[in-house]
Amino acid sequence: MSTTQTLITVLKAELKAAGLTYAALARELGLAESSVKRMFSKGEMTLSRLDEICRVLRTDYAELSRQVADAAPKRHELTAEQEAAVVADPKLLLVAICALSQWTLEQIVATYRLSEAEGVKYLTRLDKLGIIELRSMNRYRLQLAKTFRWRADGPVMQYFRQQVVGDYYAGGFDGEGEMLMLVHGQIGRSLAAMFNERLQRVAQDFAQQHLADQKLPPDQKRPFTLLIGMRSWLFGAFRDLKREPDGPTVALRAQGPRNPQPTTSRRTG
Image 1 (spheres, rainbow, N blue to C red):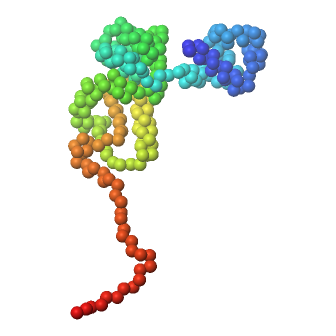
Image 2: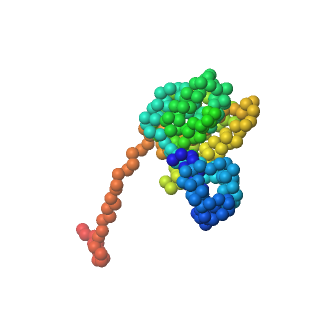
Image 3: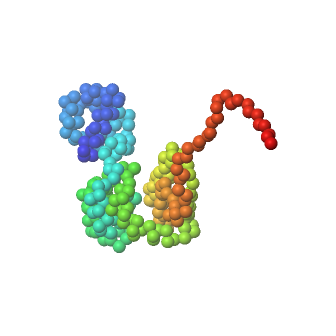
């Protein structure tokens, strides 16, 4: 569905929620009902007309834009083939990572050794892969959901395990704003999901702060990478020392007669 079609769908939903028919909207706009029906069926309206409709609906274009963005279908993950295409070209992977961080083309070419033509070429490839929707003036909109993740054992994560993890952990994590913690413990199964939700919120807060700080001058920003992981796991060397769980045991208890009779002993001899 195109952005225009999504906008019309959102407007129709807003009219329904407000209890307004095409006839009622036509009266508010000073138009014939047939003109309003044609405007919605063809999806053709000027910005000034859209402003008038927003006035009638007691909303604004910013709110409509948010609803349009939320209504557009987003990808939660790519196919293995799409990921393989991204990771096959290091420059394409670089631009993809920058796009996930919502960098502009200007920021990308100013930071990395890419020409503007190369940047446009790679953005176009990301558009064809369905990762972004490339717009005029080389602007783009992400086609990925907020919950997007690379495939757990897909080409991109395999690349990161082989090429990136060692480089990431090679640092001391002792610089300003850096931290590395390893916490091991045993918790209830139901609590694991709760901790996962908390960690996801931390990741979302980090991503939102990145967007909020986009306008800061370069000398007031530093690149950080937040890596979050949680899994049911025990270090291999520890696993080798772990006792095997005991097998089932059966407790046997010798039972005498239910009503034992008293006995006497007699010494003989």
